[in-house]
Image 1: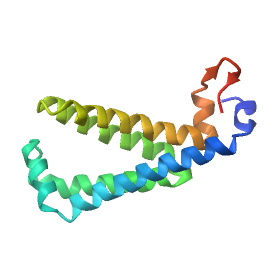
Image 2 (image 1 turned 135 degrees about the vertical axis):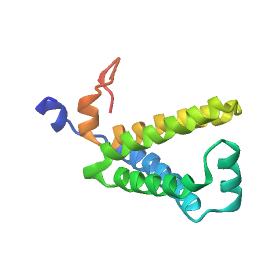
Image 3 (image 1 turned 90 degrees about the vertical axis):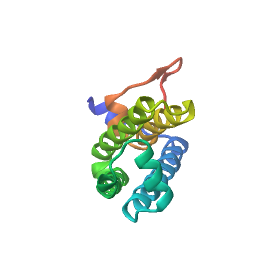
Length: 140
């Protein structure tokens, strides 16, 4: 990481777009984790149909909640993004293995991209690690 890339100003629009995307991710993932922890019947049924043992669903929900909280905290957001990406990869693989609908696979992949896009737009450290260059130079 260069000092210049860490000092480069972030546009307010990009930062707010990142916050909105990340906020939507956090809201959805917390909801998904909570409904697993409290064992809502349709969730339990769907998980069992996907081949996920019932006794693991609460633990998966707890891991999801912890990972999401880490993502929401600026100092641990990169770790949270890595953990959430792994979670989404596992969900995607489960749907592929079970021959699930294309929507489920695309949804998981799209969420993985949105996790990092939200973080990229709001965190200059991530921008420094992943410089994206457009026709006019660095984007953002």
